[in-house]
Image: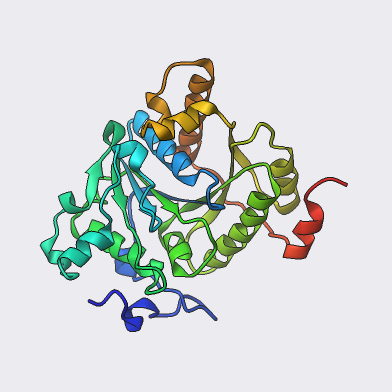
Length: 298
């Protein structure tokens, strides 16, 4: 199978007017609760995803985190290293997936969280949606999803083609990570629109926003109220979180300071909330000009 073959990249269409990769019904993830984490590039999606994965594992759930960014750095705080990507290992066997075993691309991280980095094609040469699809196919081929309670897709930051949207074909709920600033809220608005478009053809629904790296949440809350969003959690801009990235570990492995314990408790609360289920939101994103006028001070 050729990674760059346009016949495998853009077939079949996904809904009216779309040229994104369609989901083969045989590749549907069944049994596990599946979440896709979105947000502006650099907003802390990987940190949020990894700590959320750790929190789910602390609650006794079997967790799989799938990094969907060519940088393949989603899971290094769980595994303590940059792992080879699915595309790397597929390329090493000339895309003969039958020659691969789970140990070639899936690695156990903190507290038993299983970690996969999908990776991506070389810049300008292929579709990220194909990469996500091949990753899920491998996981199903090796029966790795059958013993999983929670799957978390950590998705690249920009609203682009199938690489951005493909995890929404598999997810039950989509989460948006945002800071209390113009750029990340502007990006969140576009992500909400993308989730709404995907919800017309798939089961994914918007769960809400996770406020991150922010002392306050006033702008997030004001915007959320205006479009019909809900804030699910709030994580402040803590030095301990920055240091955890430098130490290549999760927040649950840091010192027991009051701020760290408070953040750990918030992650556990969020994991419990998501496990028990949150109502889907029918948010109404703003037009770009409207959100530009809406945000900020008089």
